[in-house]
Length: 523
Image (tube, rainbow, N blue to C red):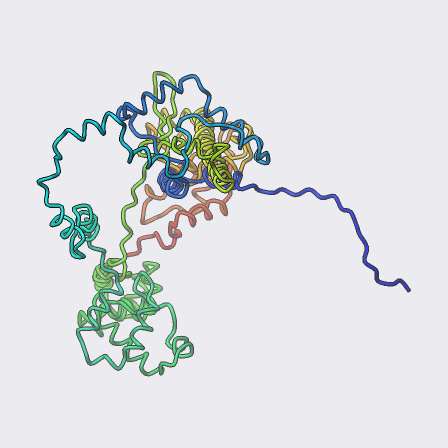
């Protein structure tokens, strides 16, 4: 019987560890221009060594004189050499960084400023005091008054223009406004909040009353009464649990109960969806013309009453790159407008002076310098990676840039990654959420990557082009005799595109195109 004893075992394993610099490089590569601008501004606030490069024309004469004195001295190169060996304390302590005068002893600068030179003292003794006529007493009484406010303080507290911008009214805000006008519903306050809290963006109730009653202490009868109150509010149809109830609520408010329109929605909604007008007319005992008139009335109803208060705001797209035709070739330029241009702050370059700075100061400056150089390096690497990917796209999609979307060629991320010598995940991050301005319009960089489908003459065509062909066929079809998936498959095969019926049906469903039965006009 073996006894349990502690033992030592050696094991060799390989692990991939992401350093903070590598993590930052990956995250910076995936940012688009707007996100990168926000990230840079955040880094400027957190790292005092980083500063935004201002217009060189505004440099002071002192800065110009200092730059002339430092001309030819490789200060940045010296910093890079220092940071190469992050574990060597002595190399960093013994090095000097040009650009800023060495810090003085505590109080030395104040002492020099406070003590005038001898010629100045002699001159001052024989001169009349220019401040003799100034009433400093009243000045300080006013300045030290707790109610005194400087012009800077007044300007800081001026109202922002953002305070004048109105926020859009949401569906819940609109319903709450209506409910607060009627004080008879105060006892249903909890039930009304539960109902409003379970409305989706279309105005439909997403939970059953039983589920809400079980998850709260509200009685079922109160929830039922609260739902009736909500369904009487504007917009008509809000609070419905399905499409049928939504349309019936609107018809009830129009006084159409018992009419052919009401019966069509109430009992034959599925047949109405399939445009089976003859069957509906036969079931109602009405002529087909009456059913068609009812259909026209139903078309005027709103199946999504909540969307008018939850409209999606227009999305503004700022291209990350510009692909411009220059002569017979195309050039790529990264959009760097409004991006802060970074540099190392000159005032921190001598804080690590070997005789005056403490170890904490030297460690802090070293850490911030390392972080600053890594950020600058990662931003430049992001730019170069995006340029290389875009050049690869131009080489493969020249016909698209020249003639339009119909000439888009299949292209895989793996192929571009092998061409430029990086991992496919790097290309995926480089094109994520980024847009390119091209002669054919503004497109997301991911748009250029699509699968290949067997095309004519043994070649391949892009999956996007195939979907465009299917959509165009359906748009041009005879609505009285629409194309079936089999017919579309035969037409595509006649053009040399080898697909099957199930593939066509899948692509049609991806584009949210109804089936043949639903597209057919029935009279």
